[in-house]
Length: 195
Image (cartoon, rainbow, N blue to C red; front, side, top):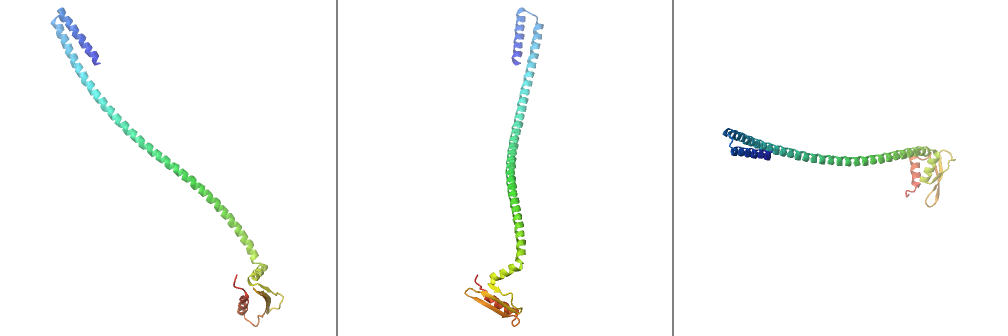
């Protein structure tokens, strides 16, 4: 733009010189000089306006660059936050899966324990029926006391054979002549305390 205006000025100047050389009128020269002065004034105004526009453009570019840098920094910060959240989510998912697996294993173990408890309760009920039966109780007493009772003897008499560690010893007690406490103590004194 500036080069074009300078070329126009040169052309005007050449035209003026031609006119002067041809002996043209002074009015024409004066008009040409006025035109040239107006052109110089316009050129200066245009240069000032262009310089101001360039200055404004540079200031705008600098503002846009700063805004862009700030936006980029904010984007990086947001990206780091997203990565941190993704990592936290991944760890939480792994922990959740682990807890679910543990919970599932504990549920299975609980069900197994409940089943075992049910079996034990059934066994205990079966054993309770067996434990309360007279033959079982008689067998238990024999294993503890090692006494074979004579169940056919008359009522006030208590008869049997105690199979001690060394020898068998007969038992014959008249319960009408002794207290129940004495009979119990005597019978328990026959039981060996060493198991």
